Image (cartoon, rainbow, N blue to C red; front, side):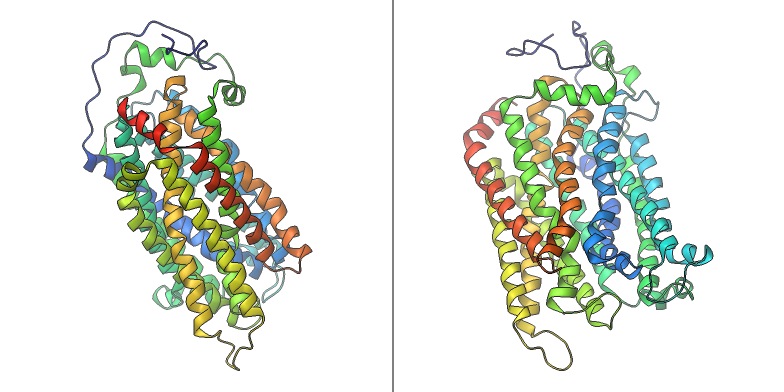
Length: 499
């Protein structure tokens, strides 16, 4: 039956008279928390990816101006993989459930990917790469393949996991926000562990077999960190997929089965579904896109900025750059602590101020932080460092504080948009997997733009990271302003009254 106010059904679905089915069992919050646990294992690897892989690919011989292109594979895979995984999980008839097969398959893909990344230098050496601080093309190819698979696995896991949380929350908007807050909390925990692992420089002494003739100390530390990632990912995946027993689609009754009938190919359905989106959904998608234009330069170049602009080092010259990378990882670990604390209090903030206002304030705070990074970069550039090459303590502290403060808006970015899009697309009957896919498009398209443009844009102004951060500051400010104006508190209040 069509929802009141909707003249047409969502694309790809036939209208049918709903069959009466028993109300789904209310899932306890503790089981919602366990179902979100896989986010910790996935985010552990993502933290290593964020903090260590941009510096590492430069060690393999990719110039800084083109390092962002390596990240292009992530948004491109997300453009297809997460919507496809969500769409297929909406229709999956496995006896194991709809979402859990994709979560398990994504975790296996991530494990394979991090093995390829960690052993890329060794594989390149076997294939004939030269040794030392020179361009190693075969290692780069293996690295990029692993990088691509890593993003495929991340998207194939996180999309269905969020859809699973939405399934378990039912139509309770408050529980949907709580479930997404749990997801953000586990992401924060994974970030803390991952960034702490990346900031430690002695893993090669604990796992000495990782140090080889083709794999230096920095490479061995990276390899060791990814081995730990596989262990944590296996544990958290088991906790998540064993925490709930999904009802197979074939047992859900006539209403659910009929809603899953396909009339169109997936990509056409995804694109066609945009015609049915209401103005409030478009506003959410636009704010998400602007937010990610702000976030992605930071996620690409955070530790590289610390190594280059703050410590004035270069990837293959001396130790200053790697000291900066490890300090950046420490700052990102503190960022994750703030992210976790914010996730815990986020529901209370949304009840008090409204989700739109909270989201808008986070965008303004992001903008101020990126502006502060530009100021710190200028101060570092104009300051004479002592002979040791270590930056003055004030510059280091200021940079680390900015990294830490950015954890608050990051927690909001990982939570509120997902809850908003879930509740606002519910009347369209798209399915939670396809709804997450639509939101994912608003995330990955800006990432594609930033990946293509940030390196050449930075090179145009001298090769540093500041130009990209200037664009990020403007985009974040615009997203925050739009969220405050166009997502008022009253709309959130009305949504809660119709639970």
